[in-house]
Image (tube, rainbow, N blue to C red; front, side, top):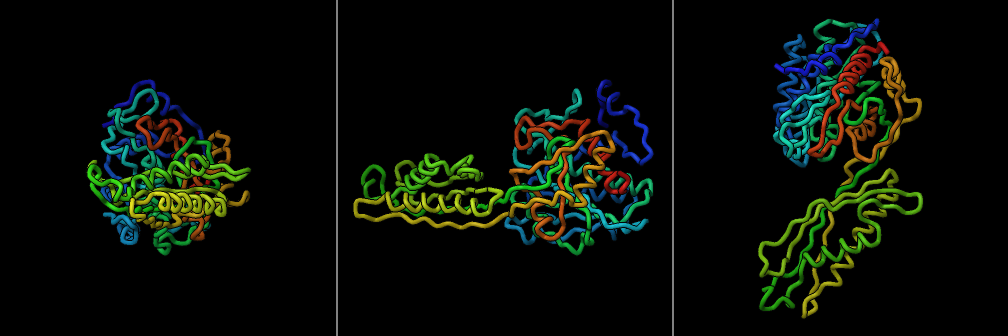
Amino acid sequence: MIRLHASTKAKIKAPYQAAVPEPDLDEALRLVMELMAIPGLSGDEAAVAAFITERLREAGAPASAIRTDQAHRRTPLAGNTGNLVLRLPGTTRGPRRLLMAHMDTVPVCRGSQPTLSNGFVRSADPTTGVGADDRAGVAVVLSAALAILRNKLPHAPLTFFWPIQEEIGLYGARFADLALLGNPRLAFNWDGGSLDRVTIGATGGYRMQIDIEGLASHAGVCPEQGVSAIAIAGLAIGELQREGWHGDVRNGKRRGTSNIGVIAGGEATNVVTDRVQLRAEARSHDPAFRQRIIKAFETAFGRAAKEVKSALGRRGKVTFEGRLDYEAFRLADDEPCVAAAEAALRSIGVEPFRSVSNGGLDANWMTARGIPTVTLGCGQLEAHTISERLDVRAFQGACRVALRLALGTA
């Protein structure tokens, strides 16, 4: 049982008079607290999917309406479950609507202990994030589904979609079995930010694996006979930093970002390291400029490999492997899902503002695969950090918005 501070309880139970159905906000808060406490990093979402499924079945969803696809068998990281889908036939006429939020969290949220105080949920363990990204979104979508199932609310055809492995490459959306989704015409994704944020576009992202092969030698007896893979990496990184190709990348009006996030190599200080592997990324809303960033990486590492050589003139070798994780997109100003999202926010007294994200979203792949998808916030703050917290009032506002979008009542 979640016990609320009296002041917080009074706030979330403030009466609201409306002619449209409202979700159970107390239950929604309990749901998100329970969901944030469930371990579920990318590739390990089975327990989260089981929790959602159990709640749906308790609310009366037929087993045949709940499906899991095989997306996890196509992802680079072998997972323990696929995407979870609840598909309901309409009781009224209208285009199918889809509500979605990804199930996985990032490693900093491992060990989350959700605790509510003064209108915010944080982890009681100060070394962990709370997992509001994106268990808050999961709870928003689940709350809408439960309200409709329990109260037998009239609705057009609906799909509720909880994808996997968003945090490591948007793989759930990328490899989703579209046939299970039922050809939705309006799609809404909850994944971070303030309640009034309506995200209509996002950047494109490219990942690189850089393998450097040097030549081992004894670092004390004959270091000159070796070729240090670490030295090659260091020279290349230094050039990228000096020339403005690492971090916040700007060239005139063109913008992008890049990051070397992982570097591994070496086993002993008395050996000239012969192998190093780096993992990096480049992002930009402009595909051509993103390619410029990638080319700068290739040039810097290639130049460094030529510069470092042994006393006998031997050099190292650099190999690049890369893949486009997701392409940039921007929805049209008059896209129906955008208009519907903004109308739903205004219906609860919130004035929306449009945003374009510098991070990837499941909406990137949904839109690329023919399902234009707008992304909404649900109160997550400082995601991917130990300072992460959930604004309860914003979260519960998002639950109200989600139910209105599901029912088409805004």
